[in-house]
Image (cartoon, rainbow, N blue to C red; front, side, top):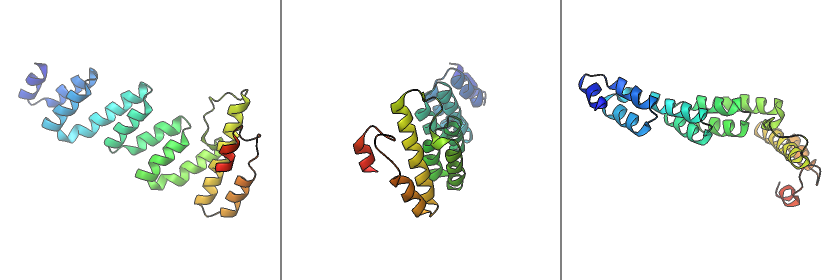
Length: 170
């Protein structure tokens, strides 16, 4: 009923805002597509923001990409030191950011979140392994193949991984 009143008064944006406030995303998208197509990206981005705030990063990423706001998705992951995800999106949508993200990843311990408990030996080994792999990938992507190979050869069992098969695969 309220939607109909808003639309009839040429105030579809208010109907969209009402649905966004109520988190009725399908309705907000439908009204935007039918009455205000120029704001559909804003609806998608709002959905991404709310999904991020709710801790649903995959859903947030999907809506940011839909809204042509890949840099917001990259920042979301970067702020959480989830550099592999940030780089993945940058490679697909904003290639000019890949090098900068790789540099940040290297300077922040390979992109491993600081939330990993350093007291747990298994997690610590895993973070060391991921850091080495991240640096090796950086070297490889910048044409420094010898440095990349040297790093990968330095990986040792069980110092860097408790899983011998994981090391063999590298």
